[in-house]
Image 1 (cartoon, rainbow, N blue to C red):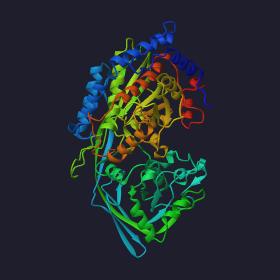
Image 2 (tube, rainbow, N blue to C red; image 1 turned 180 degrees about the horizontal axis):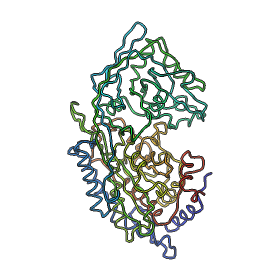
Image 3 (cartoon, rainbow, N blue to C red; image 1 turned 90 degrees about the horizontal axis):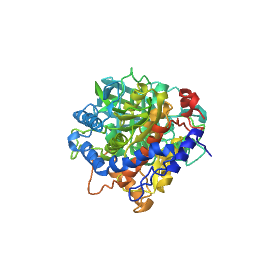
Image 4 (cartoon, helix red, strand yellow; image 1 turned 90 degrees about the vertical axis):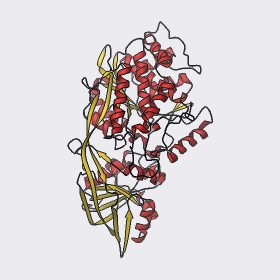
Length: 575
């Protein structure tokens, strides 16, 4: 059993005693015990916040505005970006925050916008046969090199299992093979998921080795000329249409000088159907190779096939912006609590038939609206927080968490003075739930404080419903976590008050299949139920208000891979 640090345990006890941190069914809360100084500090602000700060109608207005067609899908570097960041800045100013970046509301994030020529084809010579894979239908590819033309000529194909080199797992899918100049083909996710074996990696819970970002980075480190991931819906947790939509049109990266990690010249995905045809023509059984790749000691398999590609791309250096607002602390302004959400989405896909605006209402106008409401709650509290509270709206999340990556490399509050991060990404407008999803549950002592608040609400925390999807690695808190800062990523619960888990799971499935990274992700006043989101925002407000006033330094739980970085940052705060 994990135990909180003594200071956190004391604060959790104070929260439990005051009992005023969360609303009851009638949106009221009992008065704080005047004899309890912690209650006197925190409780009035919390109760006031629910009445005057976090408001469903205001939240809906923010979402509707940000997700309107006029914002063009909030594509970085577009006219939609200008409207988006100006709107967030104006709201921060209206609320009464201060510019958070040394007197500036914005942090400029350099980026390279690359648009691949979708007329490109991937030509496969397989034995005596030739297969031509079409962009969008059979494959999607791109380059992060910035080169206008990348040529791949008769590059040998090699199946490298999951494309993982993990010494601590005694696992190396590249063992005994030099892949320089070759095209590596690999499976999505990691071995524990497909093998259904809890002894492999983290079993059904995806590790970072299962993320496509890791797979391409590792292929680049090995010197591959190209890297292709075989799509399967279960392993990726989304269909081929999501891959196609996400990898078509402009793609964004940080410039190499700001992100010197190695880059594979060509990276992308091939559909499961195209992979089946390729392996069959090469005299291989993809099903049997999948099974072999799930076992420790797997050796890469050279295929009787080569790949050729001429990829033309248009690249241009641009800039995007993080938006930063600050509520200075009254006693320890150099220390900060961070509330974060990403403002960007997929923009407008020019030339696409029908509705081609990817409005991103749930993903992630809800998160931006959420931090605006929480900022309002802090600002309207009777007394200012003792620590500063930083509100960070980041760009380029959809392009690989680049805005938060840049912020972590150039923080306005030093990371060793950053107390905790609360990340809001894609809140579900499905009504109240008896649970709250904690993505990556079991990570940090922030969950001890969360438990106290949820207990008062008669609710409980649950891990994400689909741990195999790797959601923990797919949102901006991950960059803070890698740097050691304790981060809590909450999502809406699925055990709904109206309809239970059946209704919650059905709603999640419908969103993923019908609206996620599709033009259908739009605000709908007739069907959206916001009372659950309001309650969840109040929950994370409560924890942040506690930390902003009580001086604790939460840490990661023992055994968490990010704890060592935090211990180096703040050795005196280590339990």
